[in-house]
Image (cartoon, rainbow, N blue to C red):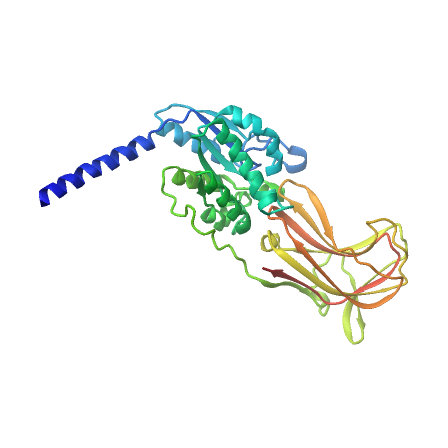
Length: 389
């Protein structure tokens, strides 16, 4: 009996080894890679200082994650090169790609790699994020029902974006795909190209460098050969430290980091910041740098107290007391998110509180306060900025 069991187990082991060997030697003839600038970005020398036409910010075409992976795939396929479509057109957001669905379907890919989500920040919900992602997968699968699908989690050192990753994971599972976690890649700050000191623009420096691209390719390859141990587990715990991240009490002028340096005076026995503007056609703004790496993809609560005196009437939506965030994203685009502060000609101390969800591709952030196209005087008391769940 013992001999028979050993023989049966031996035959079963050979069968499993053969099955795995046949699976690993499957030849892929059409590879479609859908992504944003990490996958492919054309030259943008004037605004970004980037002259390549491959995955930003690899030092050469053969060093971005797509070409690193394809090289390993070709070697595994005994030199058989697949037809590859990279980028697929459209743009850097999921909704941009929806204009390319017919092209994706027509290509008839048997291997699909999706690297998306970093630039989608306006509506991170099932309808605004997961469903557009699923539409992309559905279109590719319509072109080939047997397509093998791999979906990257989001890039964003040090922890990525847990909410987006959960949506990606759910969409990928729905279409029988493999979720490729970047948790380890995100955790190493040297994977960002800024550690390689090849670029000066903060937007480019946010991207993975050669080491980061290798991390992408390794994570994808491990998933491809079935060694990814994080498939479809609960989304990684990417919680960041909550609580106060910035406080300005105006008490020690030597520690002020504002530009330009604001005027501080005592009001009621405590220091407050004051700004006066006599010309309602001009502006006076003071700004201080906030750590972008701490506030990416986080909900911020900004709190202060404001007092105004002899303020002129507002002229247009941009005029008035200004409290806002000036943000630069990885694509080199500037935006300003501000609180609409309603005020009378003169008013006593009033609490102001503002909540904002910061996009996860932000590379620079500054807090701005002051007056814009409004004459008069305004005082700002203690300013607190905290991260909320």
